[in-house]
Length: 412
Image: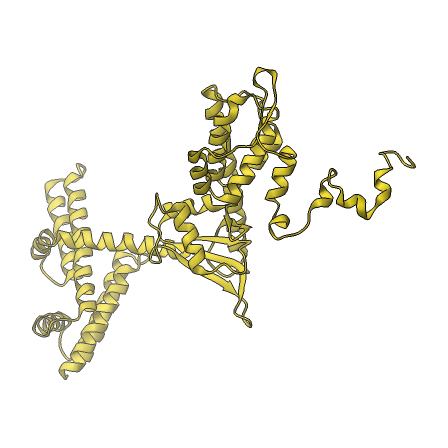
């Protein structure tokens, strides 16, 4: 046979032997039978015994630089045979139920099987194993890495971001992530992959995006962006899952992730409030259920900053603590945490009423919380006239003069 035929026969034999060794369902007797059959076929194709063929292949491999794939197969066979032999020899040595004669016989049998599997003498095989222990460690490391990679592919680190403004770009979203999380995490185009969903015809943004990362810590940091403001919109952030969008498994995972996220946010807020109460900074019933529920609908960063500002103003004997905290949460969520921190450091004006010494002092001109909240209205920011919402304005009475004459009751 020509060298090319022998090379093909050797490659096929090594592959077949690897498959036989990997088949755990085969018994030892059936495995030896399958191996002998594969060697007989290879010997017929190559025109020489299987042992001679593998020796020739090994010499050819060394002379031309080798076939990396088949070299790995050969070493894997020897590695598996050596490990099995060592394990069997240890079992025989530790078996106190057999006498010396039976022990020697069992050792010879184990060595003969290993020699046949590895294609070399048992003593040579064990020497090779001791010299190539690193190969075993590399193989184990490779298997672990492959398992982690496959697991990551089947369960990628992805979040879905909704309620984005149509004008928000990938670059703008990346900058928002970097501004909110950049101090504690590495946020770059290499660590964060953004896929902005666009209309297939117009190519314009649909107001949604998927953000993927290879860092599990960054994945959970993304959840802190939930209900933060970007380009005038309060965005929603929730963990997503890979796979087909219509698959039941993916839908089940997303439902599970939503429940976990809701519980996580609720637990975070409960812990914040619990810490303040434990330190004596908050009374047990100081905040009503409504504002606590509002806290759980905002990001942890927003709630933390709002509570910090609330605590700074708490000693002013607030008339309505829950309303004041509600106001702060809305402002911090709109302005952004960093901007709110800077404003607090500058000692900017804060809304509230101080009843110290029995006197009320308005912190803002106008109509108090109503006036302030009206200024925060998204409609007002867009230039919409909101005067109808203010009963003290005279503009509405100009439209309906009878309103100046009537009271609350009918026909007044």
